[in-house]
Length: 224
Ligand SMILES: O=c1ccn([C@@H]2O[C@H](COP(=O)(O)O)[C@@H](O)[C@H]2O)c(=O)[nH]1
Image (cartoon, rainbow, N blue to C red; front, side):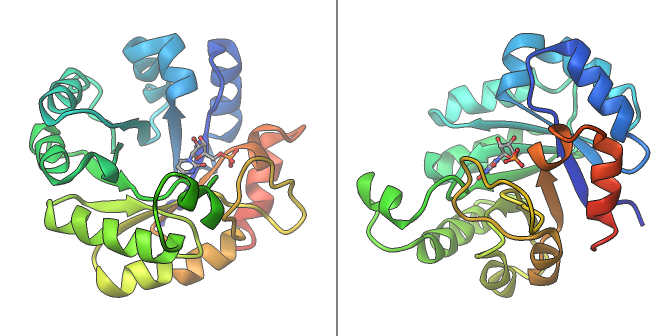
């Protein structure tokens, strides 16, 4: 079975992205490319890294009115990423239209509560309750809208999986026990997240900031 670890290549620098991707390609399950990479390198950059042969997770977290998001998803069709993110907070019509616009081979997953937010952050943007209740609510919405799954932290994935048994659960905010947390607030170890029901893990800095990214990745994979 291929690795559940998608390495987040978070850099605008194409040279560096190529180097990290080449270093981890034998042991990663896929590459996750986000805003930092996409804003600088666009579709061409994504297609270049896709040539390495790993599944591509395009983490653009689309969030706009339904028509705009659907057109953006259509514009990405030449890439056909394995996974694409939209924000669950865009609402049901936006989620339905995003899924309808995506190629059959693309899993569309909804970001619920960013792993960089805690309860106080949620309250400060007018959400009463904690990350657990908010993730549950948005997971229900994503499921009803016909999406393939959600993005949530390792802390919520067990409960989310219980209510959506065949859902696809993407878990970032992954930190091996000795890793710096940085700007993440809801974190879990790789093993903890897999045991809780994650389908794939998104891991960036614990791999990409290491002196030898492939060694760091293999060390993490050995804990699974
Ligand atoms: O809630 C979310 C959604 C997406 N991400 C993305 O995952 C990686 C995590 O990188 P680390 O360096 O391992 O912290 C990054 O690309 C985020 O954009 C997330 O962290 N949380």
